[in-house]
Image (cartoon, rainbow, N blue to C red; front, top):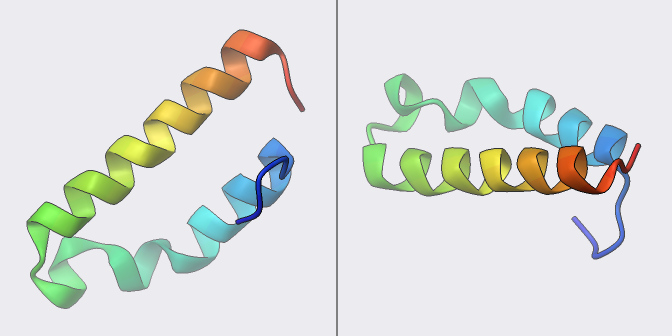
Length: 52
């Protein structure tokens, strides 16, 4: 993702990669936790700032 990407772009990339990133697929729960935390942080930021 590039800085300034829209929420729709962020969400589309998340959904597109979700199945391959899920810990059941690669057994890396630490990496999953960091990815999930980053996504939740972005979601909160976009919600707070009212970005679309």
